[in-house]
Length: 148
Image (spheres, rainbow, N blue to C red):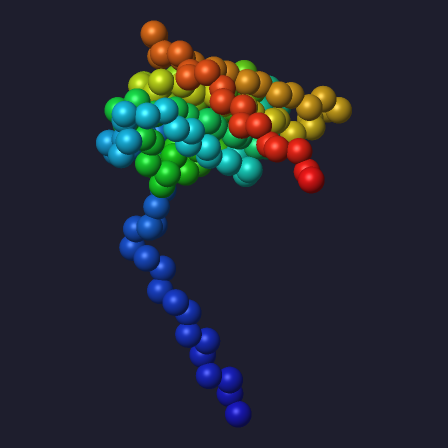
């Protein structure tokens, strides 16, 4: 007996999402206070500008927002947009910092990129931005009482 044809799910006419360099923002829900927003991007890829081979990195982003916050889906699509682009580690990390600053003008931004081993060398690039005039509040150490 012949096997019935396999039914395949139809492909969408347009992909549900695509790479984009446009970072979207929304109003900071608590602009009256400093609070830390942390993003973890463990699967970043781009290309080596010299060999065309893939480079992989783990990005950590810390933001103290001012008037705007970056929207996470647009951040995902933004990171995705580097996948087929050749750039040096330092350039990519600084470009990402500059683009986030241009999009949301945060009080503080720190990006730490952990570039995976290539040719026996692992590269770490950290970029910081502070909004002019912004100073973090003094650190508060809460004393933990000694155990009884």
